Image: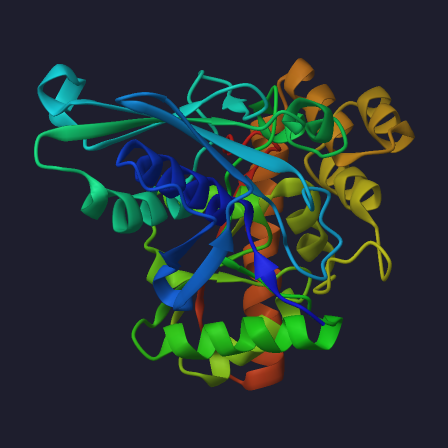
Length: 348
């Protein structure tokens, strides 16, 4: 099975090819420093010089043998070189969202840290002193593809995002994926006894926004139980769990593999929380009739009980997780829980 690259890699490759075109060097491929993933060569589909300071280049996304809806989609980079003195703050690289690249709810381009790090390492060395590259990424198919994702639910509007935790897109089996997470945990536990677990991209972004370092962040996907035990056996002394409440509230019910294929008692857990907190009987009945944790959250907000219920669930998750770790490892670990909604907003 073939590995590929994540979307930020193709965006920066196109930008590098466009800068090369401005320097009168039309290329059919570029070599990139992929940070912790070594280096790699990316094909360039097309380049065009617009004027003496502007060029356009196109790369085609190839995530390898993965079920990724961005496979084959073009990423354009429209690059203009301008005087650094004319920019606000003297930035050397300015990344902008064109058509098909999403924006966050506050209007910022959905371009995250991996893309920015790749840009800094690969593009700044190409720029003469005193010159800034203004780069607008365009994904002609991005708006249509975004409708097939949950981007809007996570606050990314009007297109796709340049989001990723690694430059390499690897096709892995379920067992391989768990082993990859365990290896990541082992490497990070060597240097830090305070680890932060997150499930998906939403949890990763929230953890970064809260100030946690990348060297502390470990993805668990649905395997929280196995990863908690592994962390304890590695000598980790503090674990913070960060993520979407609709996933993590399962831990409050003692469910430590959060895959819905194995167990999905979210509504039951929310009903139990409502009963424990003595919510009005008619509201408990309404919660029981709902089909998603997100719908329950909206109802709780409407009635002013959201903080109370999610504080109770946060405490339950922390207690259950602490007990789970002690049961399987006979070790005491400090556990903290941070719950957010689909937009990344903290719920407690």
